[in-house]
Amino acid sequence: MSRIGNQPIPVPSGVDIDIKSNDVTVKGPRGTLTRTFHEDMSISRENGTVLVARPSDTGEHKALHGLTRSLLNNMVVGVSDGFSRTLDLMGVGYRVAQSGPGISLSVMLSHTVEIAPLPGVTLEVEGNNRIRVMGIDKQAVGQQAAEIRKVRPPNVYTGKGIRYAGEVVHIKPGKSARRA
Image (cartoon, rainbow, N blue to C red):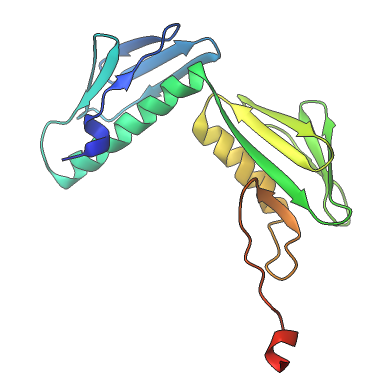
């Protein structure tokens, strides 16, 4: 029994869901998202909620049941509230600047790194060492944040680099700890 898949998805006011077989379009105050789901899953709308049902209890259908419900819930939350990820630049001389819709990273490389936003994603700079990635598609927001972090991931010996807000980087002691 899929505990995630069986939960109904509440539809907030101002959000409109159009279900045509397995093509679902969700419209809200922040925008519109469309996705095609697996043909075995049945999606229905009842009394202000959306329900996802599976045809059998096979392992594949159980997995698709929870996945479909989670993706559909993320679409509803995205068009009503939106998603955001925050990244922090840690290190002396590490800076970020807004350059049009994109950002310009100065992270102790021989050149500055220009990053353009993915479609549907907005990049904001707060101060000179914090980046906020916002959008209505959770997957696109996460992908953009991962691409920014990949430019200079946190160093395990010094802690310098680009990290997610709240990410804990465990610092290794290095060679000098072995001598003690």
